[in-house]
Length: 131
Image (cartoon, rainbow, N blue to C red):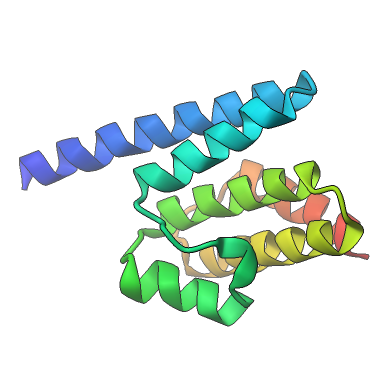
């Protein structure tokens, strides 16, 4: 059990670091580097499907049933989806990424036993984008 917890903790740290790099590159206008970090993030979770091509229900089923991700990992995927929306060139792509991110965050929020101000802020931001 201890080895599994150590592995999960190391993986979470790698994912947090990748998200930080995505944000940093996007804010500096380095879209190519941000996309590279997004690819790295998905490879850490061994997500080999193109999430942009999945419907919301297919994405949820894929993440939960096939990949067996925890709510914390799904929340990070939602954060990355939001960043992909920020990087998308076409408005319809942006909205698709934002919807997927919003749905995943809502799901995690309803299932989580702990309150997260960061999650609430992301949900509010996504609600604003989608309205």
